[in-house]
Length: 350
Ligand code: COI
Image 1: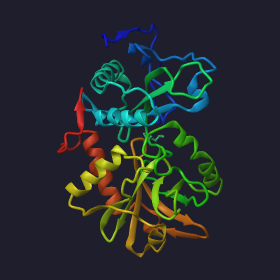
Image 2 (image 1 turned 90 degrees about the vertical axis):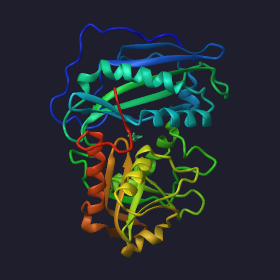
Image 3 (image 1 turned 60 degrees about the horizontal axis):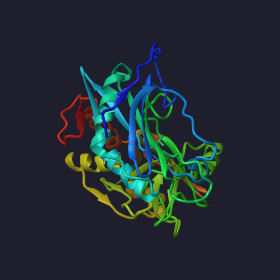
């Protein structure tokens, strides 16, 4: 593909002052490129952030051909870093393959992303726990009401300066509700892919849990509704008998990049780590479970303070952030924010 054309805007927006929450503010520019069958990906542009125009018959609006990614840029003193961006673009291609969307060129997008983030560097917040959230996504734009793999797509990257995902406190312990009616995903379905429909399918249960006073839903497997899969839009970890344990990837669980990184970091810090099936009874019988936390790009590490399954509620670590969760959070964010060396080469300086 040819070089990326940049269309400059005349007036830049005001940068936020103070807490910025998650995902409500957007920067000055966005990246877009188009796909057409026979022509491939083309027309790569960095242009002012703006609304997009698509046909009401665009296939994404009817049949949900949409995938996305989430990653972050951090400020490390005078440097800017992207955290494992290649992993996200590679995962996007797994999601694309599952939804029959054409593959994207990882090397080209890594370059485009660096160009975009460099242009928008003044939007990267510098406070602890703050970062620039990066949202690449693809939608099917072909105007056609027959069901087939679209022949036209648009790929975009938008940027949003963010603080904590839940409230103001990154490590607020959440209350979780075990969903035993709906399931998030099934094996052979799209659970392992980051497709928009997975999130749409989670909303009714999420709303019901919120109405009952819980922050998020814990998802069980789609076959026996017995084995733990994910929590909200995150992977889940348990500290059991001192070990750091997470459900093994089985086709219906998202292969989170934070999940993979925390497994690596925990082992490096000397914890025993384990990926295996975990039944809900094992957790409700909480003697061996001392801590629970979710992991994801947006929320980073989110401690769980209590868990409700059917008519029982179990409090974990007195409803507070546990020492292992805190340790992993401190070490992980220190690497991302450049307060500690990065022994894994996760941070790409741009
Ligand atoms: C992320 O952690 O980046 C996610 O995908 C969660 C998002 C749906 C808010």
